[in-house]
Image 1 (spheres, rainbow, N blue to C red):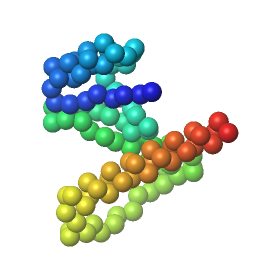
Image 2: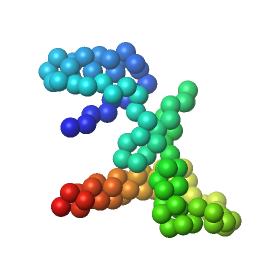
Image 3: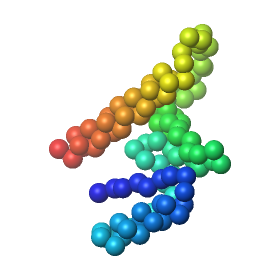
Image 4: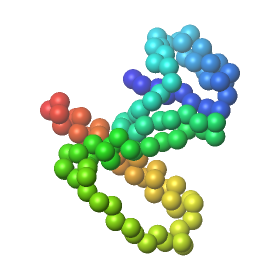
Length: 107
């Protein structure tokens, strides 16, 4: 079982980690760099989540890495919450896709 602890307070993270360690056998894997195909970068403003590797792998798989990009008109009517919800939904769907792929590999 995997448990990821994150937050803005290192002291609180250590406190929760100590409480869990007292009850369960834990292995600290240090700072997370990827999870379910999503790259995680630590910045002073917080966490930056990226699907760069997923997109790169997808482009290479379909021999489109050297394909030219296309400019698309962006909607100015979208608000930040809609964009955030869309990104979260994409991450959830991608995570489920990876999980299902792993399950089918083992069947």
